[in-house]
Length: 447
Image 1 (cartoon, rainbow, N blue to C red):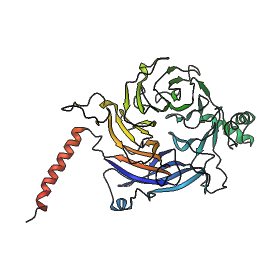
Image 2 (image 1 turned 30 degrees about the vertical axis):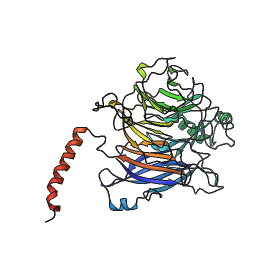
Image 3 (image 1 turned 90 degrees about the vertical axis):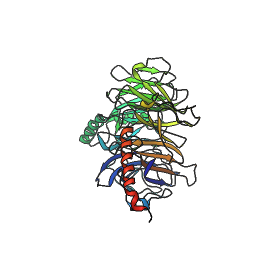
Image 4 (image 1 turned 60 degrees about the horizontal axis):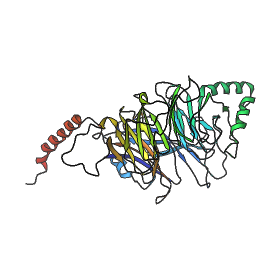
C-alpha cells in the first residue's frame, strides 16, 4: 500500500525531477524544494522549474489535505516559485550534494550547464523570451551529451557522458578560480576559455550559449557507443563508472590514466541505460537495461574483458529500465523505473531467503527481491529520486504524452511503513491494534 502525498500535472513532458531540500517543518507538514523540467513544442520556451512542495509527514493526515487531493488536477500543494528559461530541452538535472542551490543540466548540446538556482532571476516563460544565462558552461564533449550526468557526493566534481563515447570529468572549483581571473580583468572569459567555447558550442548545437566556460580535468575513452549514464564511487572522488549502448560497464580510476580500469563486456544483452553505486557499500553497483532487467554487480568479482556475471539479475519489468537508484534508508534496498509505467522497490537481501510456500509455485508469484510496486503513473517513468531527509519518500516523473491529456506528471509518495519495517515489529503493532479494536468493540454493539 502506498501513500500518494501529492501529484501535479503539466501540459508538456518532463524528463527530470528531484528533491533539493526540506525546511520549515511543522508537526504534520514538511516543506520541500523540488526541481523539474518542462519540455515544450516551441509555443513557449523550455524551462527549469523550482517549486515548493507541502508534504504530509508519515502517519498524520488532515481532512483538508485529503479533500483537496485530485489525481486529475494540478496539486494545490505544489507551488512554482522560480522559472529559468533553459537553452534547449532539459534532459537531465542533478544537484550538487554539498550545495543544494547548485544544479547541473543536460540538453541537446555537447555542454553541461551549471545553475545557481538561488541567484538566477525568476523569468516569465513566453514565446520570444530571451534564454537565461547559465552560471557555468562545462566544455569537453565533441558531440551531444544528453543524459549521462553525475555530481560527486563529497567534492564539487562533475561527470558526463555523451554520443562521442567519452566520459568527461570536471571540477567546479576550477571554475571558481576562472571566474576570479575573469572578474579581475573585467572580461567574461580569457583567450583559452574562448578557444574552448569555439570547439564545443558549434558541434550539435545551432546557437551559442553565453556564460563562462570551463575545460575538463580529464577525458576518458573506452566505450564504443553512446555513454548513457555515469556515477561516482561513494568512497573515492577519483573513481567512477559508466554504462552505454555498447552493453559495457566500465570502472575508471583517474589516478591511473584515462583508459578503463575494468571493462566488463556484455554486462547486459542490450543497451544499458542507467547505473548507480551503493552509497552504503562501495562494492555494489546496479545497472538497468533495455533488456528489461536490473543487474547487481560486486566490483570485487569484475575483471577486464570478462563477460558480465552479476550477483543477481532482477526481472520485474516488461519494458526497458530507464533509472535505478539505491535507497538512502537501507543498504540492501533500491528502486527501478521503466517504460512500463512501473516503479519497483527491491531488497537484494531477500533474494534466496524467501520461505518456500506449501504446494507448487504460482505462475504470478513476484520475482525474487521485489517487495513493492508503485503503479500510480500512466506513462513511462523517466526519472525519480529518493528523498534523503524524509525516509522512504520518492519523487517520480512520468512522460504521459501518449496517454489521455498528455504532458507529464510529478508524484511524491511513500510506502506504508508496515511494508518495510521488521516483521516482528509490525506483528507486535498489529497485535496492539487487535487488542484496541477488541476493547472498543462493546461500545458499538446494539442493544
